[in-house]
Image (cartoon, rainbow, N blue to C red):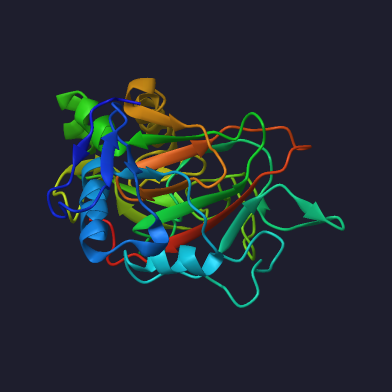
Amino acid sequence: MNVETRLHPASPSSSLEIVPTGAQLGAEIRNVDLRNLDDAGFAALLGAFHDHSVLLVRGQTLSDQDLIAFSRRFGDLDFAPIQENGRRFVDGLPEIYIVSNVKVNGEAIGSLGAGEAVWHTDMSYLDTPPIASALYALEIPPVGGNTSFCSMYAVYDALPADLKRRIADLKIKHDGTYNSGGFVRQGVTPTDDPRTSPGVIHPLVCTHPESGRQMLYLGRRRNAYLIGLALAESEALLDELWTYVARPEYAWEHVWKVGDLVIWDNRSTMHRRDPFDDHSRRIMHRTQIKGAQRPQ
């Protein structure tokens, strides 16, 4: 963690601190209880969110209702997606999505298991993807399950000028067949032909509506397709672009502790998760802030 610390001037009586990670993205918010965050404190937090794309707040004690209330300050919330087993997980709280490998009486209490979750943007297969996602740690394994975030501003900025010209007007189909854990989505017939798989089309290069910065909007690699190109050309160009995503200088890795809340901008970042021992327990609760407009 970078030792640079700044106190936001909007609330001089507050002890809230914003500590950048020193990476291309990410900051830790210190000295705050998200259950009792006043308007000035939230304004400081929101400004940090736009500046750093990913925020970490440690040491929180949040009920599901607290998590929903905090998340709702960013905007209206999506209902959690129906999972691969065809049901939702939290009765009466449809905004809560459980990410877990834990089973009770042989039935999963959540989704995505203990395997790797590959680089992706949440629900980019929708016409209007979510603005942000918030993930709160209830139980974590002793090792593994780390989450890494990648700045898609930094990835776009790093592209050579000729590559930026090649992709400037391209559109990409974001596959709706598989989730980030590799499971087939509820009600979808699986296919591995990117040209015919279900999904929606978004610009490959987008402009962030708040920052005005350009960013690469890749979504996820599996079944992605660049509209209008021959399949082989689309695959080769996507493979070239994805080599930038894999570079560690554009990423920040978070090692979870119980009580951590991380909220990330779903438009300007991608994220992935390390696998962990399936005999360990990992329980995370997630909310999503509803999208306000199509990527453009």
